[in-house]
Amino acid sequence: MASRTTHPVLGTRALNRATLARQLLLERAPLSAHDAVAHLLGLQAQNVKPPYFQLHARLAGFRPAELAGLMESREVVRMVTMRSTIHTHTADDALTLRPLVQPARDREVAYFRKGLVGVDLERLADRARALVDGAPRTMGEIREDLLQEWPDADPQSLSVAARCLLPLVQVTPRGVWGRSGQVRLTTVENWLGTTSPVRAQPVDDVVLRYLAAFGPASVKDMQTWAGLTRLREAFERLRPGLAVFRDENGVELFDLPDAPRPDAGTPAPPRFLPEFDNLLLSHADRTRVVPPEIKGRTWTGNQAHCTLLVDGFLAGLWKLEGRELTVELFSSVPARVRDLIVDEGERMVGEMAGGTEGTNGTEGPAVVVRFGAIPR
Image (cartoon, rainbow, N blue to C red; front, side, top):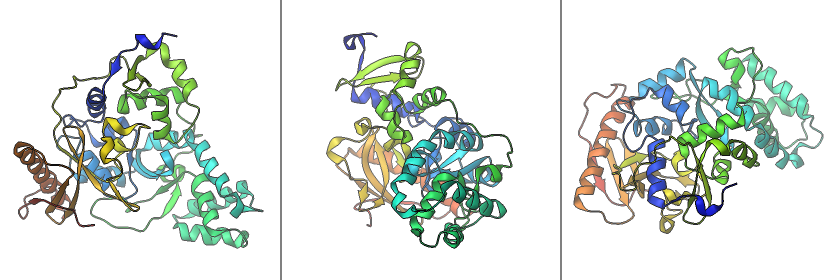
């Protein structure tokens, strides 16, 4: 193994620019929504709209109807995967990433074991699968059915067990832009009509995909993204074919040899990101995007705010109401940067608010961008 002194050091700005390049945030990419979702290994999606805004910030010519169409054709789906959170995945990734993170879901069930005394988990999974494959069900309906067999169990623990033991997807119209729908669930196999045995993506392949989308990164970074442990063995197997660096704190970082690592001085345009964007959630050390002095500013209680990048780093929050965009900056910026923020904000609202109204981006009322405290 090479000594640590032989590994080049990547400063914070160099890491920032490399990550932005992988995340398609230095310049909008000419990719389809499907290919972007695959490249990014999914889009965090606790709420319906964030995946659409994530793609708008990254793709040239993106309109909400494109992702909505993929949802309706079942080429992408919404389901619990990394970090026990809802993600929008391609159909292929939904089938193969969920088995990869199943050990973490099993640990989650174990955390609720006190509420599952006397519950046969294999029987629970079989009963819940039969119920949701018969027809998509709400979590309340699943819980009530399970309580018929285990009336003394804790209702929340039964819900957690069903959600963790089964690969449940949220069926449409939930997740479709411009439509509304209650969360109803069925298994991913049933929704996608597959009868073939589902196998996890090889962990080594996922490491390489993670580095392509989030690198350069440490073992702990990927473990944070995936919600998994014990990934070092995979990195060590891959080490001979990887580029190895260190950050300014001496942490070892791995990367694909030919992946883009732009100069630290590469311009980074303002970008409006929604709440729960994986850019801010997929590294153990987030200082490559989040300056230490503003750590925690993107949350109020348990509410996550939409975020603004300026010069590649978290620099403010935003909130959209109709066609009025409020931007709250954490510190002052030059007038020319404010102009760039306004231009990007007007573009986002003009293109995305049009999609909300069903006009697919056609002109509407004037967009208003104002600077001030966002409404809490």
